[in-house]
Amino acid sequence: MILDRHVSLGNECLFINENVEISGLDEVRKSALQNSMRENGTVKSIRRAEITDDIKEAVLKQLNAEYMENSDAYIICISEEEIIIYSESERGAFFGALYLARRSMSGIGTGLIYNYPCVPIRMLKLYLPSEDNIEYFKKLIDLSAYYGYNKIMLEI
Image (cartoon, rainbow, N blue to C red; front, side, top):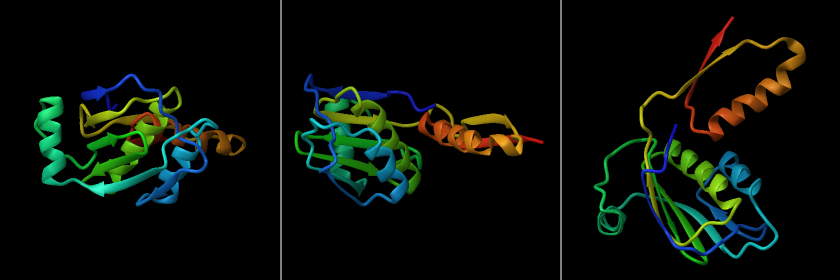
């Protein structure tokens, strides 16, 4: 599970609406963000960017945390009009977008978030479903990713 490691957010309640421009994220990540949209959103754009020395310095100054390389880690920089998800890899962008989707449903403040997983393998063990339950099983897999799992073990 990816927990809040280093977070410094204001008291604003920003939301994402259907007019937000999303760039640098694939359809899966866009879909996760679109599911968290509300009518009264004010954020104009969300984009993905590579982690730079400047953002590492911001993490150190604002969060008093030293950035550690991790393919599942992400840094989210939130201003009133733009949200940037910084990551080293697509996996980091994936977990960053899911985290943002979860947090933005109840409103999110401006600031900086730096998260990385507690452990490299976050596994869920499931039984192979019956043919009648395949649709439910697909939703369960999506839900497991939503909450930070990165492996599934199927028992047959």
